[in-house]
Image 1 (tube, one colour):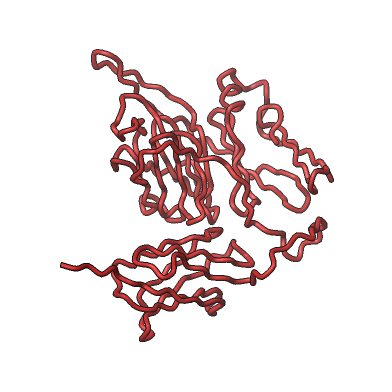
Image 2 (cartoon, helix red, strand yellow):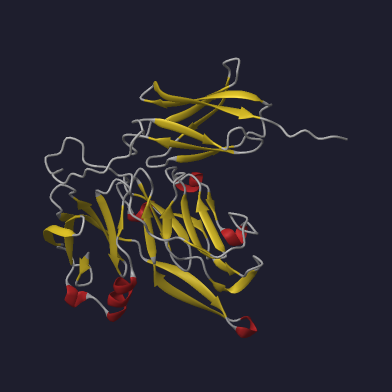
Length: 335
């Protein structure tokens, strides 16, 4: 929880409905007397974002963006660095063809699954920064120009839209969804334009091909798990999921004549070496996919393989840890 415009933070340790401990952290480097009214206004409406591993936080006041370390054992927050990413330049077109430029802070950020890259969105652009760069501020790569709002028929409007909250998807992608604006970062752990950012207004009807009202909401990282071997894991629970092994591989639908959704269960979702390997009945490899950290869903497109039985292997640390089978059945057509 942020207090006093981002200068102080409070971490609360909960066990069910009881408060176990409260930790207050004061962040140096910014003086509240130096903040303008606009800085305070933007800080009041921004959201505190954390990495999928739970150990890094990002927050900002105006153009001052803070990267912080969160100690999941003690609950303390410390400042790593302050970056000055500047403002996102937006252009508003007025009646008669005149235009007005606006300089506004980036309104939301999100970490890539591995925590290396940071994505930001403003009314002027979507951008990426490399947090491992020696100069994070100047590592910026602009991914797109302004996001133009789309109506229910996916027709571009003359107003801005789609600059709302990011959300991590269970397939490892990052989504930026608001009403009919569906933007997607397909490979968020790839540097620069290789992340394959899809802007809805440049890829009509949208990056999801649906005209429905959708919104990217924040949600807890339920698959984060405990800190293995840490002395601070003192909160235990008797709740368990019976019949679920440490590794599991579930394809559905099965049999199928179309795409297959492959869901995995792992003891540690932060791994970066988990792969799905698919072989045909003769043992030939037909497909391979690496799951990004904390991703647990993948859709296999079977359109390029013939009917038959396929063996699915889940590989982690170069070892097969789970297997399953999928039967692909093409529909019969009479002519």
